[in-house]
Amino acid sequence: MDQPSLDRDELRAGIDHAAAWVEAYWEKVASLPVRSRVKPGDVLRALPEHPPTTGEADWGAIDRDLDAIVLPGLTHWQHPMFFAYFPSNISPAAIMGDVLSAGMGVQGMLWATSPACTEVEMRVLDWMGEALGLPQAFLFRGGGGGVIDGTASEAAVGALLAAKGRVLRALPREARREAATRLVVYASTQAHSSIQKAAMVAGIALDADDHDRVRLIETDAVYAMRPDQLAEAMRADLAAGLRPCFVCASVGTTGSTAIDPVGEIARVMREVPNDGASPTHQPPPSGREGSVWLHVDAAHAGAACVCPEFRRLIAGVEHADSFTFNPHKWLLTNFDCNCLWTQSPRELTDAMSITPEYLRNAATDAKAVVDYRDWHIPLGRRFRSLKLWLVMRRYGVEGLRTHVREGVRLAEVFEGLVRGDARFEVVTPRTVNLVCFRLVPRTGELPETTDARNKTLMESLNDSGAMYLSHTVLPGVGGTPARYVLRMAIGAVQTREAHVREAWRLIASRAG
Ligand SMILES: Cc1ncc(COP(=O)(O)O)c(C=O)c1O
Image: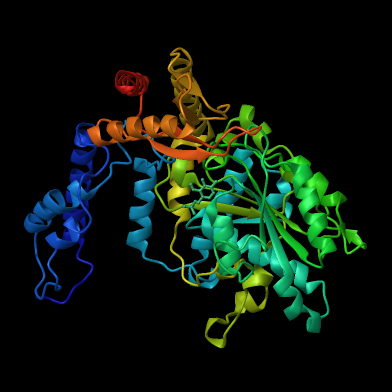
């Protein structure tokens, strides 16, 4: 075979071919079973154990394998009847951004290794922050700044490392190592597991069960963190000689999109005395040294803030040190794309900056530029902001609003249908586009029997291939038992009202 090269004809033919494949996929996706039916190992067994020795010049056999092996092994997240987890939006604009990024093939670890890769990202993060209504202090133009990570989980690790650094740097160097063993993280019982995982990665929690170092704070009747319980836990930890370090407020919990009250959380953090000297949390911009970091995890629901009417969800965000959300869930941007902003970029970079000789360059040495390798764990990074740039240019903030509002409207429609059927109940208030509902208990029915009926209903719907829902278990409120709950998350790009109504017809017809 010839030596591989950047052959233009091959590129053009390949892109045309791949675009045709995707186009055909979008055409037929609605007719495929939403959830993949393959069994564990099926895909693996269909693939040769050893790599090909000679290359293939055309698409013939590859196409056949895409259709015969890959397609059946897909769960179709772009199916209009996909309502599980949270959506994972895509759009032609975002796809073009990824294609361009791949074609440029630049590596933006330093400003100097591709200035545009850094500066487009900086500008797009300011645009997106403004679109969400974040205070100026989170934007580059206000002294803060943002970065694109792969996921909210990575953003949580970055924010936690910055928090850890802040608390420890306030201490004499010789006291830091020992103090590092006494740091404590706080999040609600409903927070995403990525917070516990971040604490494990940051060396704060021993493991997934270590709740001496990750306190899971009780929630109220609508599954939002109780600030009074947070204050109590922080006080108890301080009294025991521990060091509160990081609080995560969830804006849109994974289970039910409950909204932790960010402003109230910041207020109680300010009131809890830190070692009797300074408040544990000090609002920006003054006196943050040693204070507890407040991170807002708005992975899914943050997207709604492009609409002014939903900005109440993040009331108090001006008191937070960092804020994160995923355009890759509900904002038309292909996975992976997570935005993290902080009012204290310096603390984030202090936590992760290290400059070996081979990365030194004039711009870095002059401290004249943003080097994004200092803003997260990886050194290398691709030009991920291109897809967000294209999405924002193609749809504008108004286009994003239209998409979000339609998801919310369809969730309202669905909620109304559930409420109109006495066999069902809406379990907790809907915040944006997720409806948590279930079959109500029959008279005298044991809670586990109600749970089992709900599970059976969900499995029969998912097995049918016609739609895909997921579930969670929400804790009981006021002494009632925990409940198995069905989650209907609406926001896939191809979902229309007719799909939502059809989903309800299927649910109601199988409800018994
Ligand atoms: C509230 C919340 N935080 C964090 C995550 C983790 O997201 P990622 O896959 O971007 O790490 C999720 C995922 O659904 C989530 O709902």
